[in-house]
Length: 494
Image (tube, rainbow, N blue to C red):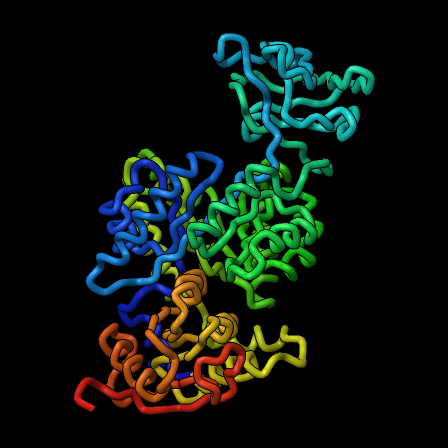
């Protein structure tokens, strides 16, 4: 393999890995969103566990204001992250935290009229007594307080536990039941209302929390039918892991949500399952997001820990399409530095990716037959290696060919040309894909010429470089990609 061609990946263009930023009070303004974008943000995440519809509506409006006012408008995707079916503790006496002592007895019950104290509290999950048995563990507040079930009284619906460790219990804290199948709906009334809000406001992705089985995804799919919105399933518990293959089959993408996952399963297993999910997403050609605590210390510090920097790099090397920032950009003291640091780490990690081995390893996992458009996409990536192409140009009305190209992980950057603003934004979760929005897909030769000029301007290619182009005979028709060509890159003087 020509080392000179492989070194082209080190050209100073945008990083291939995409960055998702959670928007909070620190970063909601038009000015702050612009700073995040210039630092490297591709996708804005709105966390519906917090904030009202009015608040999130303002975020959407500010994103659109920034994009429309930019000299060179760039596609910025919007992701709506649902709260999901959570289990929480009830209110406490006086509204203040209570100290729980290791070795003491503690009771969970269903009576919300009784305020909690050091010995008992209600929960939002009214089937707790029928879901657990003696010996099961119950974790409160991200696992900071552990309890072991001692006895269950079905008549009074009370669950008596022994507290494992000292700790302060606040009100309305999250409750996890590791390894226990829970009787919760796939989407709550709040989730359904939030998703309808997202449809009305034109979000691009729904990140569905606590997906446990394929039926959960299909239920959400019914709500968004006909909208073009894509579903990213968040895997956060043992049941989701056990049903992962079925969930992946009906999802558009996956989020490795390590926060709750690290409480629901032994924390030492998180890395192994993370790698498994990324590997399977890569093989299926579906985008995968690695999330939670990636640069957590930058909420309060201007630099990450060495372990955090290594964690981000490993996520990139494992094959993540996107890496995500949560509190770092939502409430942190250094939101813009956090994005800049994330981009720097991704750039360094990408230098170490062995692209020459990626394509053949992915091809070996492909189950034949595949669609015509994916065949063209695979051939385009193979051809880019054969001719040492500097750039791949994809004409794709729906963005599906861009997804297929991304699956085969070319070393060359990919310009995805589309007339669909939604498809352009949704390309922002695909590794190595850079969207170019045009007014119309008619006149493909002119579009290809413009894309080449942009590639030269962005430093992706130089005049005379080989460029691989995929398109369809039926211009502007979804699913018609069936042509692959190799052209010489033009420059502004042609």
